[in-house]
Length: 351
Length: 116
Image (cartoon, rainbow over all chains, first blue to last red; front, side):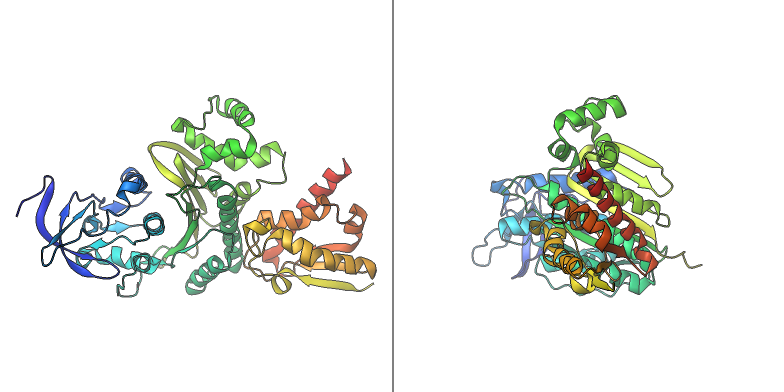
């Protein structure tokens, strides 16, 4: 057999919606061992961004499908992803990954294949299965029900602000964990505000390689009682949407007065500050009856036990805690869209 | 005069969301124009008060509440006097109190803007 440069001659099992067979791999992409924004931000976002860029060019639209094999010859698969190295994935990172695969499926018409699914880490496979990741790939994967670990709701997505399925998912989490109905109402309302923001601002123009959708999931860490609700879009990002919503001159003036920084929507250097400005702009200007959603989310978080809001948008990373503390960061690697995560404690950890 | 009751959760949707019809099926503009305004018009004609009950919904968003109640003034469907005399917002369940407060503040802001 003639080996291709940069490839392994080993045989791997590829699973698609229609077939499972042995293949050889060419140019295998790396997946970090941990995909989590809290503990491995750069590798997680870097992998997702690279996946977006690589699958946003027409030439790569079909790369995830097996090459055609002639008769009994073993085919090659180019540019696959080795998920066997992944040992932990958080609910938020799982949602980001599933949204990328959903986008790839939508724009190419083919769900991506999986390689060596039987070798994937059981907890990773369980988290992704509960999220509905394998449904996107039209694969049936049976995994044992989660007991005592992360309880994750099946992903919900849409383009309109139709909140009934999201509210049902949140209700199920609260019913299963015995959460306070008042907290549920407040958090579900914050999620609704976030989805409305996606609808209003994330996708101002059509793009043939994107799907103008939002994705949602919710999860509870059963050991700690911590609830996570996550919403993401693959749109233009908050720093680029800001001047469209409020006017470039006003944003430049506010940036200068609030941060002593220059604002350029194309320059990600101050994206953390751009998100912070978006959180407060409606309140501070009082100019419009619109734009109350993000400040309202902050108000809701302030009333949640151990509440935390995190927004990642392009290179910006903004965290706001119920005690009023903030962490504003700008990373070197962009997330291509906006990710919003709400956290609260549903109940105290069991001794 | 007796009150006329309108429940957002029961008479419209338990998951109201969005501002405009393009946003989604249970948006604030549709609620205002197809449910709230006719009910308020009917209440005014019968010299009643329309009591809008916020209990029972799964969630409320600021855009929905603002468009439904602030928009009632902004669109000029009713005079400020008609609204203050004939519309009341309330909840019996305390978990909805903050949303009643928000809706009242959107109404108040719109009334202020209309007065200028």
